[in-house]
Image (cartoon, rainbow, N blue to C red; front, side):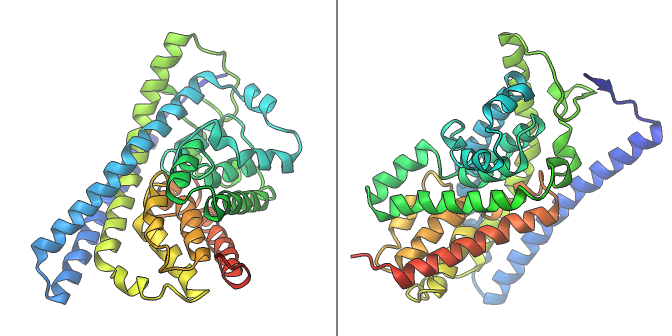
Length: 355
């Protein structure tokens, strides 16, 4: 069922004004961030040109690493919109809410996307009727619980406690947070309105949530999927750019040597690794090789915290969450994984001895 969105002239003008103000806010945020970086550099007496060069290099490194995975996620999102119906979701999902949430932890093996690509996929699945608890579990688990990350972690650490611990802790935290959201109501109550009313292929026809639409022919479906992927890539890309700028600024301004010097305490080491994971915003497909460099300097519990919390929440994914969820929900999506991985990491440090 479709309805054509008719807008009065003043409503259209208000909508355009809001869009212009939103775009202006991103430019102002970028300029403000640049001003903070320059002021901080001038305050230290360091060479501005050299520091800005480091900032630019780090920004490009983060963005270039993440952009292809965001593209993959938007393509998968477009394919879901074109070829997956609400009836398909209802047929595939277990009716028991606990079993459905557990299934969400393993959906990454069907949709192997990282923390950048999973956001548009989850948003699209919500419009198809995916239960909220399942979507949140998938959102947090998929960046680790997929075959690509499984392979990279195995290459870096081998078949040992880090490999097993990374996947077990990720599943525990993701399912735990998902079950919390099982009591939060329907997606309409926690998602931004714009995330619930996708526009198909740039058309002016608005597709209501859980609309029953006929399955499209293959060629037409692929064409619409690519068109929607392009639209969504640029929509979500602004959050990726902002997050990459912020992550690069934090990496440039915050001395990692100070953080690394705190690596041995059972509690502080976990907090330091969580802070590093959040600030560095390394893609989950390659973060295992970075974590390998911390072995011997940091506790095993803290390394596991780095490998589990970082893929769930970092600066760029936090900004992308804001494009889908209401702000208070984003706060829960940050704090719950933070506290759970902190407690698990500290418990491992205090109770398990790795030889």
